[in-house]
Length: 206
Image 1 (spheres, rainbow, N blue to C red):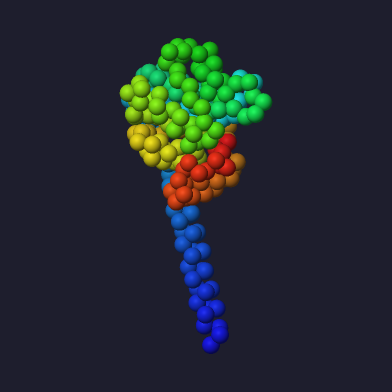
Image 2 (cartoon, rainbow, N blue to C red; image 1 turned 135 degrees about the vertical axis):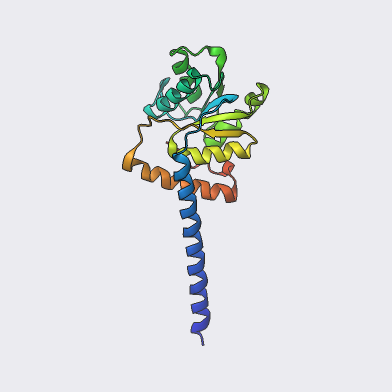
């Protein structure tokens, strides 16, 4: 009869494992489905999620996000663009500063650009909220990579914004290269719903 408790423990462990796998799988599907959504609509602002910059020059990933924001701006979906992102030790420019410079060089007036810091996705959005509120902008178009859209939307909703998905259509991260990112984002979204999205500092979109 000593084996009965062991069998029970194994069954419980198996059920827990299957539950975790099921939860992750459902979240992964949600992340994937959201990555395929593109729903531009009139909004108070276009919110560009931060990504790497190099000496004031946006990385290819950040440039793709900024180009999408520029297209939305030029089509009149919003008259305000919020660029986000802080900087790593030793950097001269923040990601937001690099983004603002990029947009200004392409004709966006400085007065139509707001800059926000943040060292991760939650910080990008949470630090932008006061400026958005000051401008009466609650509805936002979230511009980032497709695989990063679900978590960004979830964070924005948690912070009482009304987000709509407008992922970049020209991300340099594509094909099989996105698999790792989708898996990471699914893990982040799954954990974020449990522990809070503000506790995922270790997770970076790109």
